[in-house]
Structure formats: C-alpha cells, structure tokens
Length: 182
Image (cartoon, rainbow, N blue to C red):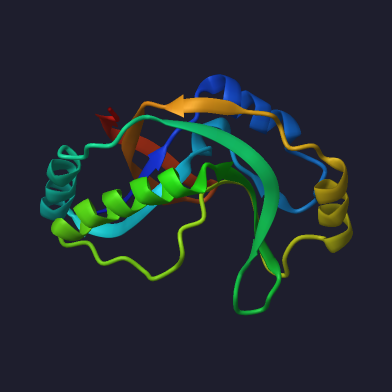
C-alpha cells in the first residue's frame, strides 16, 4: 500500500471563508472546496508505509518560528505542455520566510528518503483547476481584472502532514500529523 503525502499550512476558517467568497464566475473551473484550501510546502509523492513513518518522524524535529502570512494577488500556472491555463491561485507573502520553511521541510523529507522535483517554490493557495483545453480566456481575464483578492492574514502556528486520496470528484485531503511552529 502506498500513501500520497504532502506538507502544508492550512489557513484558519475565516481565511478559507474569504477565499470561498471570491470563487465563481468561470465556467469549467473546478473550484477547490473548503477542505482543499492549503499552502503546500512540499509534495512528498507516493511513499510506502515505512517511508511515511520515516517522514512523520523526521518532521517531528522541525524547528521554525510561526509566520505571519498574508494573501496577495491572483495568478495562474499554465500546464507547461500546451501553455493553456491549468491553475488559478492566490499568492502568499512574505515569500522569504515561507521559502525558508519549505526548504527546511524538504530537507527533512530528503532525510527520510524523499526525492523532490526541481521546481522553484512559489507560495500560493490553489483556488481552481482547469481541464484541457484550459480556462475560458474571456471569463478568466474578467475574473483577474474584476475580482478583488480578499484581504486575508493569519499567523501560521503549525505545519500539517496530509494524505491525498485521488477520486472521481477530485482529491480528498486527510490530515495525518500536526507539527507546531515555534
């Protein structure tokens, strides 16, 4: 049996409510649910039970101060192959401490045998995903132009190790362990 794991920050309910309040208006978008809103620090991928235990043990040694996180502007990721929009997201700041925390989590993951991709870390929360052929350009442009990013701040007090289970209706995220910051 394998587990699909990632480590993330989960915003408090009031921040998630603000994000949910700005979602909508783009046909074909698969909007994230309340339970899916998180800021991924490291995607561990598919691991077996033993490696999952090693990851959880390694993360227990995480030492990092709490971070005051602020959400900023909307952005998009294309899917790389076709250049079409694949993801709509909202960025998070301050970038330097979040990047440092992500690097520390990845280092602990490497100690547990995880191999990570080389993509540059960009702190964000995914709001919607788009299937091929991608987002309707006019609706997406209207959203990006006319939707105000919510003013949302919180102090991240913990990181969470999640299991991601893929299903017909999308991913379901189950928190496995909580690791306090500070």
